[in-house]
Amino acid sequence: MRDVNLLEYMGMDAQKWAEMFAKTFAGEIISPSGGNAAVDQGALIGWFAAAIESGKMSQQVVQIPHLVWKCHEIASSKGWDDGRNPMEVFMLFVTEVAEAAEEWRNGKGVTETYWSLAKPGSEQIMVECPRDVLDLATTARTSGWDDMSEEEVASLVYWGFLKPEGVPSELADIVIRVFHAAGEWGIDLEHEILTKMRYNETRSHKHGGKRA
Image 1: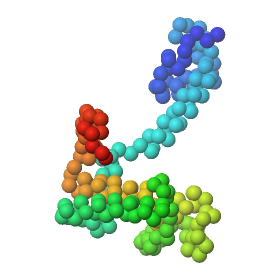
Image 2: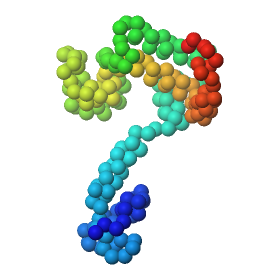
Image 3: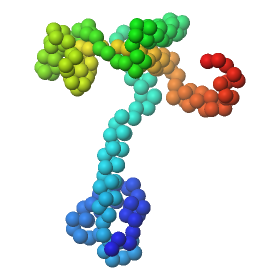
Image 4: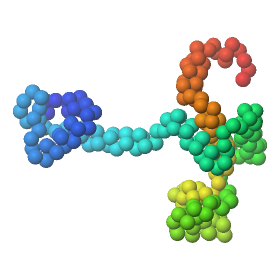
C-alpha cells in the first residue's frame, strides 16, 4: 500500500532517484514512515521522461554571451577583423533589414525559408565532408533538392552546399551582425537587452499614443 507521494519525497535529486531505481530491483525500498513502500512506477517513469526532455533542452539553450562570442569568432576567422568604422557597421545592419524587406516584396512569406546553391566551401571542408553528403551535393546540383528529406537538406546546409534564404534567414543575419559588433566592441549585450526590456515594461500603452 502506498503511503508516500514518491515524487514529493524524492524531489528532483538525480542521485536519489538513481539509488532508488537500483534498489527497486533489489526489493529494498523503505518508506520514510517505515515498512515497505510500493514504488510509484508512474512517477518514476515520468521523472525519467522529464529528465530526458530536460537534457534535450539543456543542449539547445545557448546564452547570449556565447552567441556574441561565436558570431565574433566566426566573422574574425573569415577576415572581418576588429577596428571597423562604426558607421559602416550600422549600415550593414540596415542592409540586412533591407534584404528582409526585399524577400517579402518578392512574394516570400515572413516565415518562409527556401534554399539556393551556395558557392563551394573551403578545401578543408571538402576533405572532411562525408562521401554520402558529397553525393547529395552532386544530386542537388544536377536534379535539385525538392525530393530530399529535411535531414538531407540540413546536411547540405551544414556542409555549405545549400544556402538558407528568406525573411527568417535575413532576420538571423541582422542578429548575427549585431552580435558580431557587440563582440568587437566589448558590449555586454545580454545585460543591455534585459535592462531595456525591464524599462519597456514601465512604458505607457503604445508609448504614449505613438502610431507604430
